[in-house]
Image (cartoon, rainbow, N blue to C red):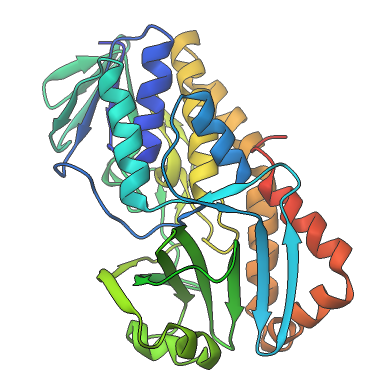
Length: 342
């Protein structure tokens, strides 16, 4: 086997699809059965929509015109210049990618990676030999830890909580509502469904955090919910490198700053073909260099915004400043919306 992919989420499935289209013998191992729902940014940036379309994947959802920042009565909009984004349920995205992978003849097996060994010729994963292994096993990647690539971090431990509401979307933009200690991200994902994710470093239940957004809570009041509240975190995850021998880390497993800018899926879709190119060329070290280029803008913008908004006076001034300088807000949104690495 040329490539084994550990992790059957969007990052792993996109990697497998690129590998299959490049003529590699590839398989996917995923420990969970069927279509998996997880907390994630369900608002796909235009770059992610373009990357999926290039793979022939068109998940159903709700087109997004841009981003809106809201703080009480203040609001400011910025449209995507690179074309529409799309609000997509995580389960719909997973199902569309999984269908494409299976149609390409790639086996997807329900298996958990327990032991990884390497030699000069390849990788042996629980007795199965492959030339290379891609670890796309998520935010808290066990393979990243097993390889000694995980870098523990204690400061600024943010978490995400998400719930879906059954109601007609009131906007064709992702709304980011700002409160003192949390943000709420409102994403239309279907004609009758809205996802509301809360990111915070504070403790408490989803409803506790939603209380910080009285206007939003009132708008959602009386609406039915679809599915349980799901959580994820801590969001910040660091890796010392993206490659170790013949193992490459892709997606959240490769390191993650924060969901603040909504680029997670777009970055995973950009990393997938980069990892496949490194495998084809037999040069995993090249993937580390390309990963840094692909993620540079995301890492810089996200760290800068996260750092600024961790200071209460700066956080309170963010939306008023965006109102006074709409050209700067539009430029920032445009930078985030562009394909990774451009």
